[in-house]
Image (cartoon, rainbow, N blue to C red; front, side, top):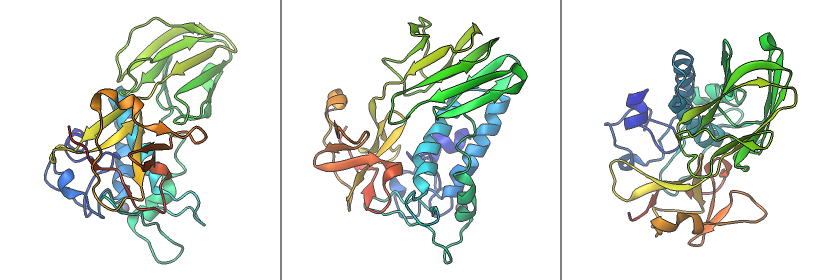
Length: 305
Ligand SMILES: [Zn+2]
């Protein structure tokens, strides 16, 4: 897993070019229309889940979240007739996603593609003895039978930069809430509106041991920041992340130069008041990559350092 993530991963969490690994750290060199076979991320998420069950480290779920939102969620056309999915997810600047159809496209990825989108409930919660891990910010309700506890998670994440958990039942146990690696300044946890003062690092879990009472409310603030993630091999080529979300530029046909003021990223992108996560910069419309279906796009740009 370390080999793949550290040396073969594209910004969407996907891997492979033309169904094979290229040389280590050759990412910008291989921005083609055959990148990121969707099965690879399907399998990496499975592997990540298994590793987490042996060794519950937050970094596993940091990867899981990246792959889930930026590849798996981006691999289905949500307005298509029958939930059509991708084989490759091309990251060549100016590429367009190609989706399956009813009768004439049956790659391995269309098989795993049918499974992928039934699994958004996986890996949100894990438990062992008296500890509950909360990994993902997805609206859901957990029934923990052995403890006679329910937890309802209410959130519009990632359009909302936070999440709320409401406890049902009375019980003493520990909750470990994942603080994602991207959750830097402004991260906080409140219990019944009282701020918890524990200091934590991004990319770890915040542990709260408590005698939980019916109706207790946990609020997590997860402010997003922009960051540029460069490819390891081509200087100045990178993509723009906003918290966990990869932004793609729409209606782009080639590698575009973005002139960013790196010290002022927070004020560069103008968000549409009526359409969260839809931005404009340099006259280009930026959307979460998972929302782009029918237009040519680019997620990699020439961004002078
Ligand atoms: Zn496949």
